[in-house]
Length: 302
Ligand SMILES: Cc1cc2nc3c(=O)[nH]c(=O)nc-3n(C[C@H](O)[C@H](O)[C@H](O)COP(=O)(O)O)c2cc1C
Figure 1 (cartoon, rainbow, N blue to C red):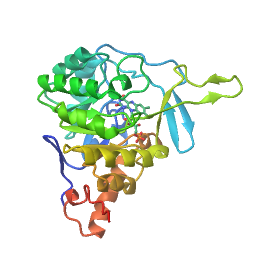
Figure 2: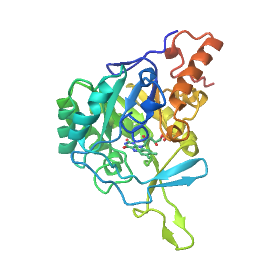
Figure 3: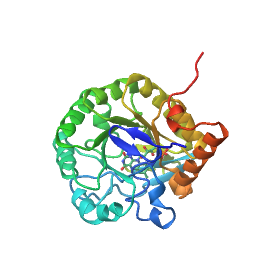
Figure 4: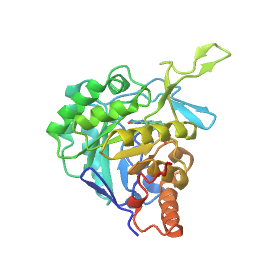
């Protein structure tokens, strides 16, 4: 049975990866699951300098999901290369590094630094809703998506993935801007902008007011957007948003996703990625499917 998929030039042993920011740099989860079994590990978003992130509270549970306002807390690109990458290099798993610049120059600076052994792909994060500069402000503007992608592509040999925000009217236009800028793939969706209010104090739960919604609650929206993006571009689409089971993952693949990423579910079930891989295998056996690629974009429409 073939589970291998290709995303840009990157060959993944299976289509299941982790979603940035929900799996740290892999260390903690390495105690629970065999990281070698994953299609790829997408690490927490990095910035040029270490970032403390937003003041608490940073997470808030909602029906079938969660709001987060972590604000890209991370040790910075240099500390990642020095302290985290050597750990990941010991595993036989593709490593995709999520980068979150505040300017085009910062994206280029980090992409250049990360054009090194042990890094397989760069995920350009133009979709974080929890930072004041950069992030979603870029991702809602197709011209910015195009320009950042184009400049990053100039300085790296790695597979370049552009992570899109769902907080737009037409996801197809944004996906196309990434493709036109030279992206090897797009990934979506990042979190959906939401908010919560404390009725006792009548104050916003989050200091930033707006936070990002993730988890099963967003799955139907994510699926629709992945379907739309896959129709708008020829490059591979990586689908995510609320995936909690192999059935969810298959829905995204049938809608056109070449690979899928699992985020919030890792917090509930650290073994979720592995269970999804096993479930996909069983589905293939039961349905006499020899190659996973037969499933991708196989949605039947009258
Ligand atoms: C706590 C938390 C932190 C996140 N941090 C990042 C990040 O650093 N970079 C990024 O591109 N996306 C980040 N995301 C978004 C996820 O990668 C993913 O796109 C989103 O949560 C939808 O998938 P899910 O419903 O499976 O979690 C974060 C999500 C959560 C819940």
